[in-house]
Structure formats: C-alpha cells, structure tokens
Image (cartoon, rainbow, N blue to C red):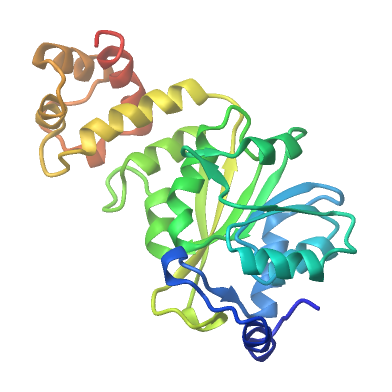
Length: 281
C-alpha cells in the first residue's frame, strides 16, 4: 500500500529501514490536497505518458495513476525503488527505472525510448536534481509539452526570472528561449516528511518544440556573460576569453549597450550575441 499521511510514511520508512538522504535532497510529499493540486496542474489527458523523477514512496505516483496517466518513474534510491516495485507491481500503467535520470547531463536514453511518442513531466523533484534536470529538458530536441514540478523556491525563481530580476541568469535564458515558466504557488515545509526549512514552489513550464538551436546558442552566450556578473556585459565577455573586437561587434548586432550588465540582456539578444561570438570563435 502506498502511504499517504505523515504517520504512514514514517511507518513504512521504519519498517523497511529507510531514511531520507540529505545528500540527494530527499523529502517525501505528505499532503493529499497538495498532491491532488499537483496532478490537476499537470492537466493530464487519459493515457498520457508522464515522467516522474524521484517518486519516493509513490504518493504522487498513485495520484497520477488514478488520474489515468501512464507513469514512467525514475528513482535513484535502491530501497525506495524496491518498495515501489512491490507496491505498484499490479499497475499496468507503471514502469520503473532504477538509477539517475541524467547521463552526462542528458536525460537517459532508456527513459527517452519509453517516452518517444511524447510526454509530460509531473514530479516532486529532489532538490539536488532540480536545476540540471530542468536544463536537460529544455535542451531536448522534443521537450515535454507541459512540465509541473515542485522545486526549491530559489530554484523556481531562477528558472522563471525575466531580464532585470535579481535571479535572472543562464538557466532563465535557456528556459525563456524554449518556453514559458511560471511559479504557480509557494509551498511551506510542513507538507513534507521530514519537514524542510526552506520554501518550495510549484513551477509550470510550457515548452515549445521549436527554437532548440537558438536556445543552446543563447544559453552558451549567457553563461559567458554571467561568468562575471558584476561586470558590464562587454567586459564580462572579454574576461571570458572573447576578443574585444568580436564582443563589440556582437553587442552592436544585438543592439545591446556596452555598459549594461548581463541581467538586463533579453534572451533573444543573447541569441544574437552568440551568433557572432561563436561563428567567429
């Protein structure tokens, strides 16, 4: 049976000799109302394939299956994976992969093979996996049509930030070029077992299947520009190893003033900058 309350979660963990691993950023969702809200936000058509990363003890998994989704769950923790195999062995719509969802910063090939006909992502992401996982999704040739994930609030702000905001950076540029990210709600720490001290957020991303090459180019230029965040964009790019003349040509092409800081440069402007920087590098 899938545990759905704090007491049930603690009982299953104790019975199987399991414990949340801080190194992996593990915390178990323990609020049915929030679980149902996450499933609803996923807007999952019956029979849709859903990728869930870090299913833990399966509370969200159970909700997704009950909503009619076919769930591909990827769980790194061996003990949790063993529990899920037993608890959900009778579910025809459930597939489990044990291991890391990422291989060399890319979504693992066997997961993509299952998801080849299109998919959505709905997950309570382990804190340690959130940033590289969302970035890997945004780099896919065919990203999910909709992604709804619970992540640390700080990470959600970096993903959804727009030019001029404090949290704007390369990840914001990448996701902004591939889709639209929005923080749906902020979440306190008591909905987890064990409770967490930081705030979380429910984040939605509507990805587009177009613009991948531009997004990769814009992200690459943004990484160089933000490497020296306190410097003006011209000086930062030069400090990152680009020739002064090329940098100035790139900024003129993008219509970006030499003295502004990277955080005010729009995603589309980073694409134009990258087209000059890396064509001539």
